[in-house]
Amino acid sequence: MPKARVLAVRVLAKDAEMVRTLLLDRGVLRTDYKITRVGEYVLLPVHSQSANVLNADVLNLDLEKGQEHPPELASKMGQKHPPELASKMGQEPPPWLASRIGQGLQQGSGLGQELELELELELGLGLELELEQELEQELGLKLELVHHDMESLEKPPGDYRKLLPENLFSPGLHNKLPSSFDMVGDIIVLKLTDELIDFGLDIGMALLETHAGAKTVLLDKGVMGEFRVRDLTQLAGVQKTDTIHKEYGLRIHVDLAMAYFSPRLATEHRAVAQQVKLGEVVLDMFAGIGPFALHIEKEGKAGKVVALDINPAAIELLNMSMVGNGLHGIMPVIGDARSCLKNAPVFDRVIMNLPHGAYSFIDIGLELLKPGGVLHYHAIVEDQSIGADQVIYVARDSGKRAVVLDVREVRSYSPTLGHYSFDIVVD
Image (cartoon, rainbow, N blue to C red; front, side, top):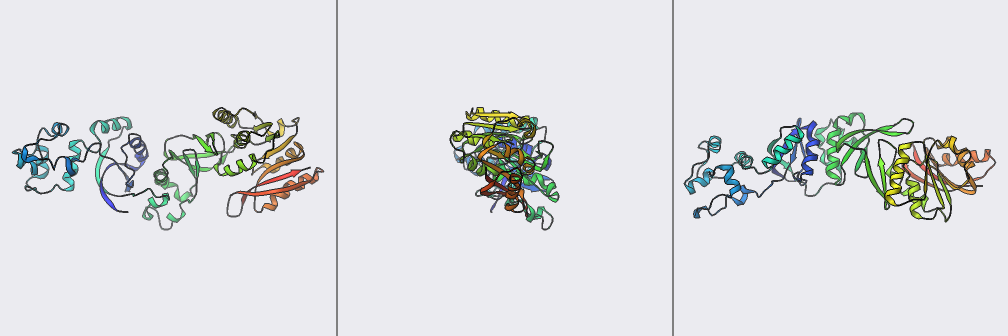
């Protein structure tokens, strides 16, 4: 990419994301130049707040006719002009400028880059003084404006890794940058190996720069606790974990710190919802924030949808999504599947999306199915035949027959494991 000398805000790397976010909110941050890391500093390219006086509006005035600087510049300069113009107008250069250049500029010579920057700062171009003061006051930081040769982004690259130079990392580490991540609403969630953790800010900023709709980048350190919520650390952007995720026309309320959700099951949510027949009664045993229930209710065929989860925060988010989407036929229930379903009626369809633990609940799922009902069973296994056999053998032990209708690989879980969904009819 070509380079150009650009006005930039220089801040310490630890403060860069805070300043970047504020500059973006003010409409000052330039997105056509690459944010640059130089040692312990980050350079954030910024727009000029008014016309580029140095290029045209002042230096090309018709000075032979005695035309003066515009008022906004005259007030900055005390009606003085740069030396190459002063000779034409009978003026001496202002003291601040004379001390900078001595006798180094002859009549008609061009302004050097360093002097050009000084003029821009003195004239209040780039970041206007009041904006600069406002930012400094709000952030509690002293902002430094510099000129720097910065790489032009003719259009933002689709791959964030292209914004991270290989020499930023130790040899071979650039190749270990993650190629995939989750986009949940306006939040990017990714995992990093231990050796990449120290580069979290650089990676987060690159992701924000290449994904216009993203506001936050979170590091996923795995799931934890009884409710299996993600252990998250903010890498860049706005500090938040809540968002609204759009999925096939639904607006789903998500809080990644409060309840688990994966956008990678979007196709699966819809596939199951489209199988539901008119008037069916459906149970989602491990509903989470309710994406299966929401999709089923949106299709409009189910007679009743019961969404059960042990996590109260997940059910609260489901309630918010029901209101937000105008869906009122879902019955949210807080409780444990083994204890609260003992006297439940039977269902036409039971969804068991708990891939790490659904095996322990197969017996309950089978008991709750009407003869000829369908079980949607999820498992993380090495081979799809293993997951199917788990249901078939438990059904056989309880005197029932299970037949696999369809198997879908929802996602790759690891090099040796896959997350599979099984549609199984039981009678």
